[in-house]
Image 1 (cartoon, rainbow, N blue to C red):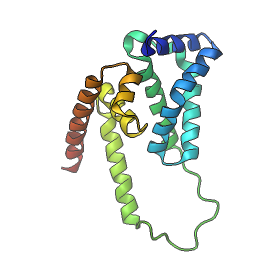
Image 2: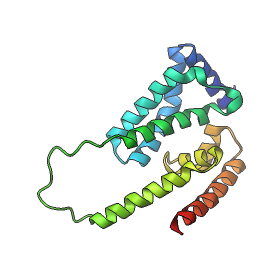
Image 3: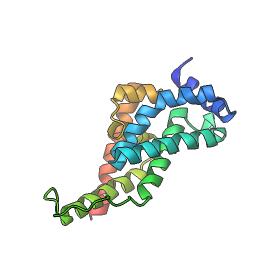
Image 4: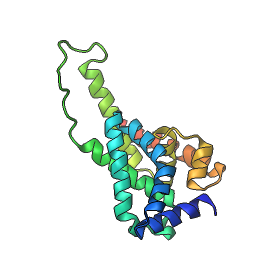
Length: 180
């Protein structure tokens, strides 16, 4: 059985309450989901929380998965993206101890600029078609190669390359719109 069909079957079985299927899904997807969360959140602890929230949501909502609407991996990564966004929106707890002096790493203006740039990129990504966005997120936030992405999404390598090129081109255009 090919990976996408196996993933779809695992989600369907999870939707029926099968813990063995859920464990297999976790084994297959936990690493890339955690990597994606780490890249987006920048905090290992918050990334682990987002990963746990992802799989809790998968367990709760697996019954809603419909194979005819898209691949199982795309559905799971969409669930992960929502959990990561929810975690990113939550207030970050302040440090237990405030530093005695200001950090020389970055000025307030630099941090604000970086924050603005991050927001612009994430906003532009949300406007991309799902297929292009999924490929870019897997490449940049999960640190997967194009070959690994092709395997996860069960599409030809050429399709991954085309979607990457199209997504980056569209993303550049969206970011230019914001700049003007």
